Amino acid sequence: MSATRNKFSPEFRDRAVRMVEEHRGDYPSEWAAMSSIAAKVGCTTETLRRWCREEASRRAGPAAQTASDRDRVKALEREVKELRRANEILRKASAYFAQAELDRHGKW
Image 1 (tube, rainbow, N blue to C red):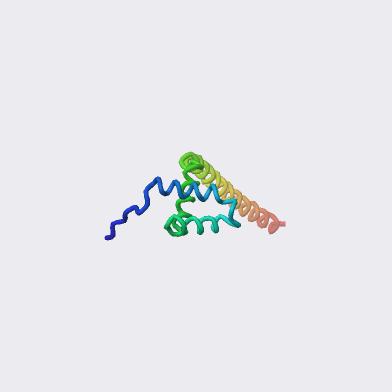
Image 2: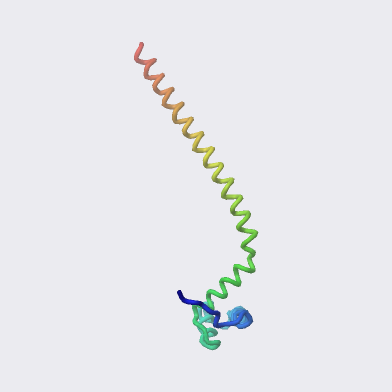
């Protein structure tokens, strides 16, 4: 079992992420900015990219979105269940009336 330790302090991470945000316009892409800054500060580009994504998701407020998304998913699942039930009833009714129509034509 390997013990992971944080090589970089939270302050270092915040500074690196801020540098990417501040210098993003100086590079053709966000990845290019991350690559350059990661090389300068001494971490890998992927590590810096992960830190930037974590900061972006932290700012977006995922807890509030998650709760509303959960409620929306539950409501949609309820609706799907009701629609499937209605479709099944309609299928059975259609089969019943089709059979009744066939029986009726057979008697003439």
